[in-house]
Amino acid sequence: MKVPMASPILTEEMIQAAANAYRKERWTLGESVTKFEEAFARMCGTKHAIAVNSGTAALQLALLSSGVKAGDKVLSSALSFVATTNSFVAFGGIPGFVDVIDGEFNIDPSKLKKAIDRKTRAVIPVDLYGHPYRADELSEVAKKADLVVVEDACQAHGAMYKGRKTGNLGDIGCFSFYPSKNMHVAGDGGMITTNDDKVAELCKKYRNCGRKGQYEHDVIGYTMRMNTANAAVGLEQLKHLESWNEKRRAVAKQYDTLLKGVGDLMLPPQPTKEVVPVFHLYTIRTRKRNELKAFLESKQVGVGVHYEIPIHLQPIYKEMFGFKEGMLPLTERICKEVLVLPMFPDLTSEQIKYVADCIKEFYR
Image (tube, rainbow, N blue to C red; front, side, top):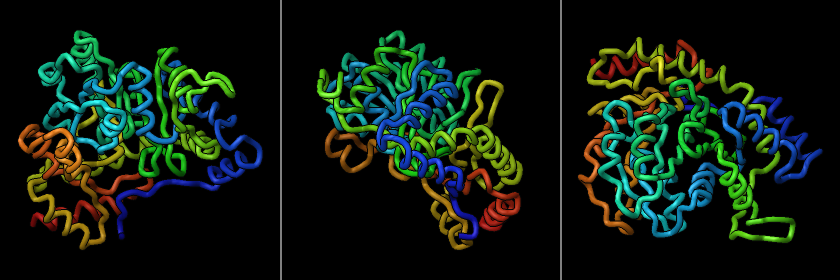
């Protein structure tokens, strides 16, 4: 591609950090894991951070440690990657969905209350595309219904809402370090953040086979540890996260200027004094999505669709739970309109202008 959609960064320093971890540390739950957890907790402003092997694992253990069990309902957004709800469907949780706010892509708190029933135990708001959800409004509804709020911040490392970092907006936060994210660990990885001592202790047990001691187990656990070399890379990546996010915001600002008023494009929500997004993805909307996608690809511009099929209309969810088209009108419409443009910290002004010029050419 002349302009790729993403370009994950892996420097020689990061490679060397992983090599040193292999040479000098335990390969699982080594010293670098502890250091990464401590640094990530400081970044989020939380008391604890627990490293695991994926963002899906983070969500699953966060819910289990909060007492969510098979048969309990968990509400979330269907405008997300399927892992958001797979995390609890895998252990017998029941999914429920709430439509989103037009123009913001995240759960509409005003619609949350109507979706709560006697089986509902938790809600997972998603900071989609790196834009924080409306935490205060959602938490107010959740508190009245005694729901646990597990924040899916897998796309929002370092974003802020009213002075608080993502990962510290609900009861528990969950992150992914998959290679496409704003920071990664050169492989799969995830993190749980919380201020709850009990939740943190349970998550540490769950990730490590339910261990109380080396050979003593007092809960049914999993093998969801983060590898030490991955943590060493994450620790180095974290040092650059703030500057990378600033560069992403600068890229988004250039796109905003060049694409304002072009065709029928709807641009992403803007930063405000209260909301500081990190633009994991720069996502536009257009009724001509498929045509524009094909045109940009013909011009060697990398683009993507996140997400073409909402979770409730995924074949397995329709089969298991009987979800049907028309349940979430806005979510379903957005999934037919979203298009992801190239976004990464080292995207040049020339590349941005080329993408914008191609889009303008399409509409002409």
